[in-house]
Image (cartoon, rainbow, N blue to C red; front, side):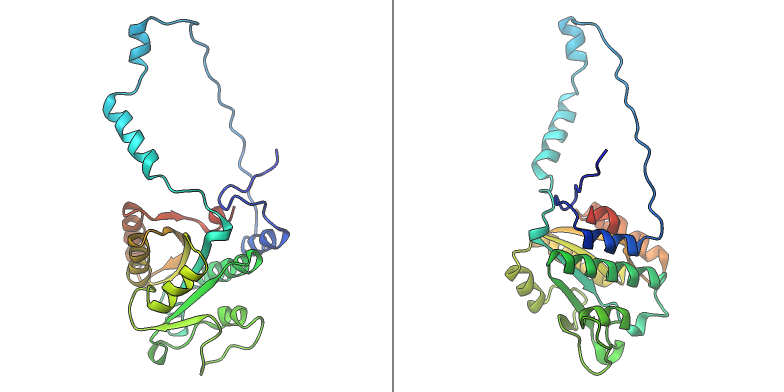
Length: 240
């Protein structure tokens, strides 16, 4: 059975597939489940029929959920945000190689889809520039530099990425949904996600692309963001 691209509602291009396959060493295929519905009687008494309806409180909850459901993702209105993945943090952040790998894969996906990638650096004088692996992508294969920002990088001193330059870039690109990766999950990533949610964006936090120095802080951050309205998912699930 052909696999459909549900998340971005587009048929994945060869380039997008290549990005994902390069990021993932092995592809697992989920077994199809077969649902069986037991046949019931052809007719039921009114009392039985009423007993099958959900209670009024459940109906109200279902209606509220439907009213607040997110619109489906569209590639044409999605932007990719990379938060403060800088050299100074390389040896400090838990599972930093996975964060860098996921960010790199999403940057390649964004390029294949011709969607914007916005990268921030937190006070680079102290925390150095974006890691070399990502700088190379930003420079289209060029050499990483320590003395100047790569194209598309916004320097900031706030924890949140929602500075004027970033917000202007999102607005100019007609963005409605944002994929967010970076560090640290419980500080800069959390404040960025909450600021974007307050501004009406659909926020997708890619769990394999965010981390903190302490795994406990990361876990707390993901739980908080999920409760506050962000979608916490994997990078591969987001792409497909």
